[in-house]
Image 1 (cartoon, helix red, strand yellow):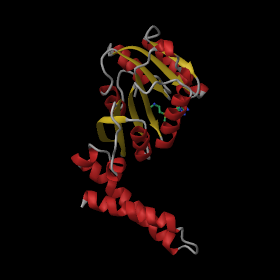
Image 2 (cartoon, rainbow, N blue to C red):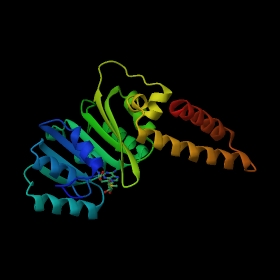
Image 3 (cartoon, rainbow, N blue to C red):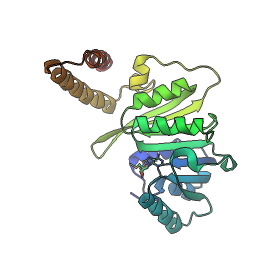
Image 4 (cartoon, rainbow, N blue to C red):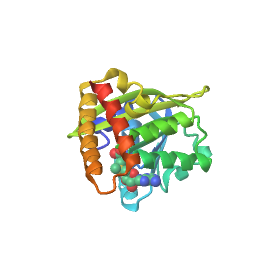
Amino acid sequence: MNSVNLSKRLEQVADYVKEGARLADIGSDHAYLPCYLAEKKQISYAVAGEVVKGPYENALKEVRRSGHKETVDVRLGNGLQVIESADQIDTVVIAGMGGALIRSILQDGQDQGRITGQETLILQPNVFEETVRQYLMKNAYKIEAETILEENGKIYEVIKAVPSKEPVTYSKQELLFGPFLGKEKTDIFRKKWAQHLKTDTFILKQIEQSKEPDEKKITQLKEEIGLIKEMIA
Ligand code: SAM
């Protein structure tokens, strides 16, 4: 992968970025996404934020190599702390991290006034998508589009959310499976949840057989197993 040939996963993220966006790509290791978007002239400006020095340096190199220094500003820092109100960011991408980390980056950014809640969010959690959707619901973000895709044997979900003037409510099923993905039920979606069902069933058996079974966990797992069976039956 490079900023000319993105992975299928990042291509889907790029597809959700609107023309002329002012983008913050948080956790931007090689800055492939903002450089790709700058090359296509799909964005007017981007901050590429990275908290770790090595990936930050790789991002700097890629921006120099691709000649997009004017459009893509690489900054070293934690989460959304790299953006200032003067950047006028209207789109935030956080991709390739766990759902809990994505939620905490968004929550901290909100608490520290780095985002206003009016930005479009494009999120690609590697795990715990439900945690991300819970954050979106709590903060009146409406999910506008979702995609599930498979690449190199891994299944990824990409979520695009926009601020809503009305409160947003999702059911347990919509939070777990995704309001769009749970309706479309593509083959990849079914594959993901069949795998999940297998894992949950195995863990449940292990817990039930343990000396001091965790009843709360058992209830949670049984509930999730029920929802999955209903969804992919
Ligand atoms: N976003 C790219 C993608 O989707 O291909 C890179 C994903 S990589 C697995 C995750 C990157 O996020 C790493 O480079 C890591 O250093 C960075 N990261 C993790 N926590 C971060 C934080 N709190 N703030 C900024 N970057 C972070």
